[in-house]
Amino acid sequence: MNEQTVTKRQWLFVLARVYLGISFLFSDHGNARPNELTGFLKFALKNGYSWYQGLVNFVVVPHSATFGTLVVVAEIYVGIALVLGFTTRLATSVALFLLLNYMCAKGAVPWGPGIDQSDIVLAFIILFSDAGRILGIDKLLADRFPNLWIL
Image (tube, rainbow, N blue to C red; front, side, top):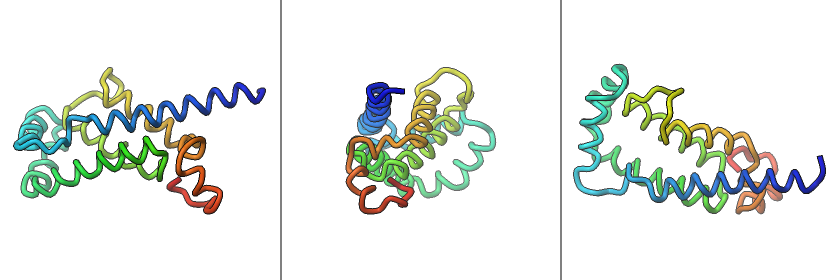
């Protein structure tokens, strides 16, 4: 492959990373509106996978305020980190965890169409590429700490 082809591919990874980051920044899952989490939990208890409903009912519902705060913080972290290319692999791992939870709460089929499913595929592409080291803060940190996995 010539150098120009590699550069175009790398820019696609950066574009995917920034897109997913912006998607998390504008997400409606954790925008801290009153009773939003309560509504989503009721939806999950009605529509989610049966094993996930048990998890939500016994673990999340009793501590819903804590989980609501964690979701908001996690989404803001993922959004900012992916846009800036800072701790890209760690942020993508957190994004995958959140997206899998959203998909399970909705009871969506993993192979079916949906925004969570397509974002999961995009997150795996970002996770296994050097999207943060192409253009971002991770590029600067990788020169100093080349073996740090979260970059």
